[in-house]
Amino acid sequence: MPSFALPSQTKPNYTSTATSFFSALSKKHQRLSAALLLFLSLAALFSFIFGAQHDSSFIAYQRATGRQPTASYPLSRAFKETNRAVAPQRKIATAEPLYLTPAMELGALVAFLTDRAAGNALPSTIDPQQQIPADVMLDFDTRSDFAQLEVDDLVQDTWMRNPIVIFSKVHSPQGRDLKKIFASYKLKPAPVIFEVDQREDASVLEPALYRLIGETSLPIVLLGGRSIGSPETITKLHESGDLERVMKTAGATIVPPKKKMVIPAPKLK
Image: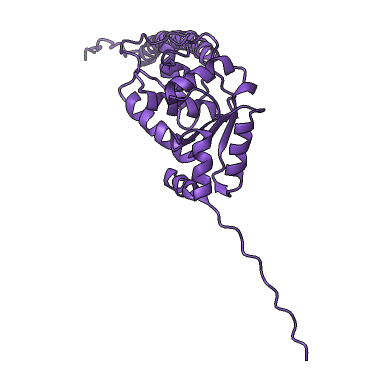
């Protein structure tokens, strides 16, 4: 019987196919990994460069302005300000300078002089016969929309804090007598006394006071921001008892003297 031989069938080589697939996959993974690594490296480099520039500009801004991050001035806001110019820019004033009436000017001047912590003195360059520039006496923006209101509040507060102000000279006999009169009252607050001739700005301050108050010589006594007359007038007010009433009207308080305790004498049996 004849025999028939079947043609031989070639078995697929699964092992080599899998190896080729994984080899291709591995190469693709390597390329992706390399691309990702390159991207991360570039991102880190740009972040470092930007951060260094940002920090340096922020440090320069701090040095120029003296601004330090605080609770009310957070660091995030400070970083935003680095986009501004490093040196603070002075604003160009467009509004007109603040005009002061004589009463306002006098109140601002007394507020300026009574700031003992600052040791204020008028500059010798000003003309005492003209209005003292508001910028010299006031420590706020005199060209702002609220400057007028701020001056009104300042003047009112000045006379409330200093209802009695005396401008005198150290060796003036009339000034010495007036100071004795006011010292005889226990006043609260105590009178504010300026020895004009002892100040470095005496040559400017004295004529400025004459212009603003309308007097021609020292001493000058202000009650609530107004002159109460010559030394002779004040002496008469003191002798008549009217000075006490005028001082109370100006806002001064006269502390009554403490009553002495009378210890009764022991009874003799």
